[in-house]
Picture 1: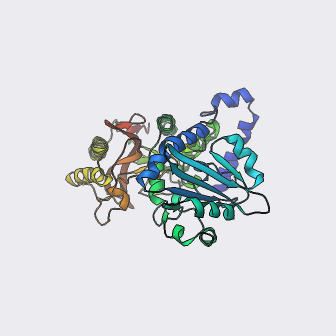
Picture 2 (picture 1 turned 180 degrees about the vertical axis):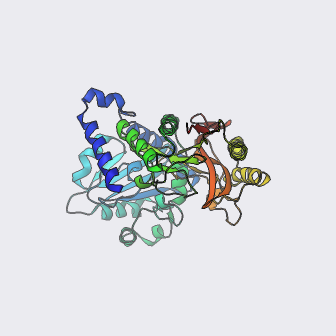
Picture 3 (picture 1 turned 90 degrees about the vertical axis):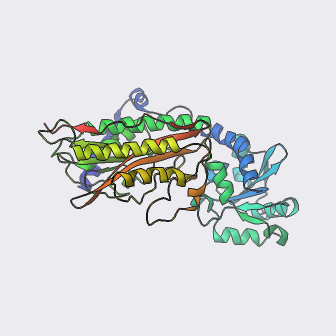
Length: 440
């Protein structure tokens, strides 16, 4: 079966290559100029100063290199680093000043990019880390953030050898003021700009639309979960977008018992099944969506879902709406999660261990407040106590779990929303009713 899938996907690739340029471009989405360079510059200029102030950081050094680069390389402009370089951000009266200590090989491109205030070109006979450390020793008087973190993998990019080498060249007073960049990165990346929210809105709309189209392909007693996943892979290839998370698990199409984060299987879709599609796309190689849609396969004599399935859906949908209404600036993620948990318990749902929601943006599980912590048998994470702010973007679920043959089944219809000063705002129309698939 895996060999057959590979052949099918390769045939689809050959077909796309055989199209004329005009045919290919007419199908592509998000195919204009990449807005990331301009948005990145705006984020550094407008959001980074406040993030550094909130985190009580006076300087931030990002060490970049080839092959095993820092996860934040694209955010600070060192994604093309070949030789080791240091990107230093310092707070100044009117914002943030950035200096890049780089060898000559990357200097021309960095100067043309125009993202940074100063490009310090280090002669090949010298080491950028040595030059950067000398500058830091002479000029940095406050807290110096480096990318190490126990809780935030995106803020944990400096390797042990990089950290050791840099700190061996720093004077003791500077070493004494080194702090984790965890809080700085949280403050900076958890907020998205208006332009980014527009892009995420379009990505969410496309994702939801394709999931509805995928359900239209289902032929009960013939189609498998994997068949529907292949259809969505084809849509992505035709549109020129990529996976929001691990390609092996995107999308998850599941007509059977709960599988959590997993791959789609060869299970045949049958009448009476409740089907889950968990799917996301990456656009402009930067921003991702995360949407779930649910369907019910009618038995031959049915024209609507059975009363119990409909009730499960109604409870899950109402839980989603209650969580949505609770999301506003100043509320913690734990409070949002608790609103839905109380509703689930009142209506007989089993305990769902997954969080109600999570930040989404640059990755599917992005940086920001966690909408969780009120589950039975699970302690809240640190970010569950964080308050929601304007510009936070979430993927969040409406839950109901019950027992079925072979395990449990959970409705976890997942929407995307942004926090505004007036509360939450959907990025695409939420699913109001179960999608019904006829068996006739």
